[in-house]
Image (tube, rainbow, N blue to C red; front, side):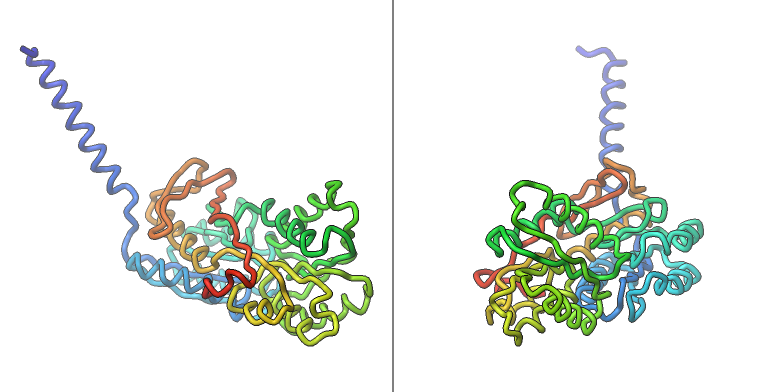
Length: 336
């Protein structure tokens, strides 16, 4: 027969476990009624519209209120006034895709000091300006994969160029750094990067830059455009150019933007992740931050609704997942 003190001790231990389990089950509940704003690089960019839709869907499912505001141009300081307004409005969280990693820092710090949680998505700011960075995929992996795909399309030899967004864009610049690192490998000794051009995430400027690259480099065999605006503008130019089918274009684009160019032979293959899922994940992360469930510390975990469980990595980075390669065989399976 067990001693009474043993029975009491066992009962207390069991009670403690039950309480702990109960607390754990409710520890990650997200508060209802949160106000979460999304501030993209550029309000009328189709990629950002899709990402914003993901934010809206997630916030709605959480019983909160969302808004999407932002500039019509992708200038370095064009987001500053919006941060100030959102801070004054006492938003619980701001999800921001930065046009410039440094220009926004003092304003985001001010917002954080006022109690607003800051989540960077797609294009990061300085680590001290946010709690979390929701990254599409591993930046190194994106950059290297772009070069690997271009090498395959070009047969491993020839001149190519990069058509990027703005000169200060954090995400594109990071990917390009890894592209250049990948090019150092002996596998690419017969490939030459001749130019990095900037279309400023503007359709017409990207169109003109594509024309300029082809005129300036008559031996150009390929263009990598790691921006959805750039790749679609470049494809539009190539689709009516004598270089259609001769110059290889790849990069990062949405299936709906690129479908006609894949089907008419302008583009063989390109890559991307689902921008709606990126926004959805960012909104859940913002909700958990605003509810006090996480702080942005490495090793913390949280659940993002239909996307499942995620772990915070070093420097507050959370990775959505690997990108998809789209071509004529699979593009009709996707609608975004």
